[in-house]
Image (cartoon, rainbow over all chains, first blue to last red; front, side, top):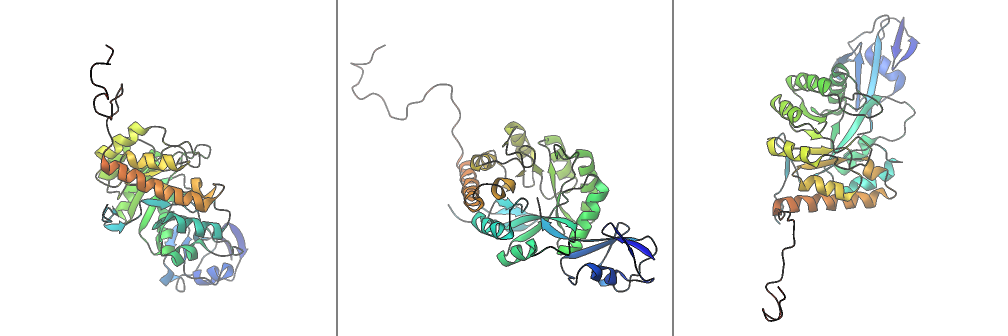
Length: 66
Length: 262
């Protein structure tokens, strides 16, 4: 299926979980937050939340700013 | 002076009244030294898409220094974006504090009052400690306080401009009416701007660029710490009234009335 992760389109296996999508970018789990289609997915739910076709996954962290 | 003059935001106490931002520093090392010299206990970070190639993290620097992290919603143009960014920050950083920043346009980076107020109401309802960045508008400051914000953060002048406090009168009006901390945010260019903010009665100053883009950030951070403290002490001491003409500080004349002319 096709999803986007941080704006980049990707072809990924069906049934990919949020946790697997995050691991494409980073092994880090602390200091990171995920939204799927503009809804926050709590860290405790990353393993149990599966992605669907065309889902938009955003993986954010803190950077210098403000 | 005793050391009990603490800044209290949402029940949390800070002995430093200088809040730092982390934007604009040429490296994490320079930032680290500047933060140490500033004595800050509360420092903002922004939320951005994770960059797998990034080396080092501003969070590590803050953690090592024991500085509380204040995520902002910089880069958001709508209430919806700001609310989602705040929720992501809460998840990533395990804090329900947020510096709410909703910008009207890229050129001025001035805060959009309508979107800011909308986002503030939604975030307060969602349990956030909301510190909104606003224009120097006493009416909006009052409305945000009534909406449950934990502080208000009026600008001195546009972000990164270094133009200082363009409307001290409005800042004074905000301070007079506020029952929550007033934090002067944005526009500080040098130490005297920070001191003026405190003399006007602000409870704290938030700045970044003035330090991080100074030629010597660590030195400017130390200057800002002193300026904030000096301005605070002057505010507590109570300045003399301004007079149109001189008022002698020495009594009478040295030779009595004989030599006095007219």
